[in-house]
Image 1 (cartoon, rainbow, N blue to C red):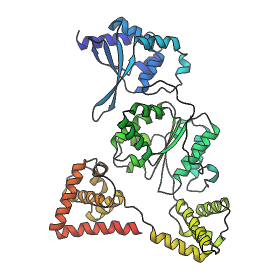
Image 2 (spheres, rainbow, N blue to C red):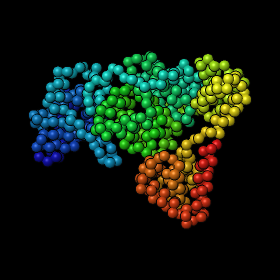
Image 3 (cartoon, rainbow, N blue to C red):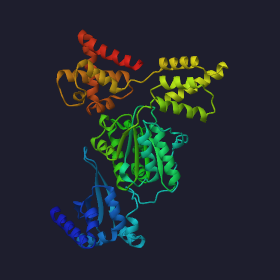
Length: 478
């Protein structure tokens, strides 16, 4: 028989299944399946599935029915495999054994009522139940009790409390919190996690940084345990991922997280993400992920105003049993404006000076400490700053640098940005290329060589590069 005839057999099987299940179950679980191939020599039927969620549900709830129908049309020894496309760009698929005679028999012996199983969250490959114990890794000192409310965080604090009270409410899923470093994003999401654990102790809550997620994924690939890695994350009820911008220019990690994200979302699990910028500014992040980041609530955690900074200081001082004059608190509130982290650092510095020099904290000490902290601050140079200054000096639009435009002035700004990023950041050439318009590392290497050679031959060009570099360095010192 030809593959076309086997495909007709599969469609006949689907017609029989349609008559034996409800219209709702057929449309949701069997209609998305499609025929891929049948190997008559080894009796293997391969079916395309849109996701592991669909295939897992069929195996757990319709194995016996499906297998009996397949036996009648493809033979008693037929083995069903589900084929899922995991990387559309590189056309990489994953095949998972779906239903055999053993699995079909077990499904009858072990089958729970469908109404019960429909609420379970099946794993990607394995079907074992998750362990009831899970270390959440939530930071112990970050709770709603010490997350001081103010105008800049009122919305997100209210949303966080709402999520904690009702994690099944999908209105704020995912919750995507963005804002500058030190404004309290990590505190907020940990507070949500702690409140969920308090109100719903049965929930499996996990907090970790995006960087650690990437490290774990790389380790899983190296050890050939990727399926176990994915399965573990698919069992989480509330996944809190900090600093999602760390996924930029890491396409394989993004792809894996994409599938985990989809599985959790489809199963009604809560995702909480933080980032240092809004999704639209995540150059080097897959469009399909950016789209999903905007599905729930997208909200900025702004820098605290003077009143909130004052209240944060008072709370910290009282919690630590410190004695700091009101005029010092007012001075710090007015002059330390960047972040909550800076406020706490100044308080710690004042107390250290007070102990070392055996003197009371006063306004003169506060002025010296704040002035010293401002002078020695050493902010790392970011690739975004380099691109911004390159575009400003070369007078091109930032979006053109990320585009495929080959205009001379655009190419010049792009190459200078790559050259300075390679010189002043710790990003690899691969990540620089992926960030700037999804180019490969050879493009970056070529750009660096081109700029280096041209600097030595073209004084006017060398002056442009020097001007951009000086602007970047001056901005760093501000």
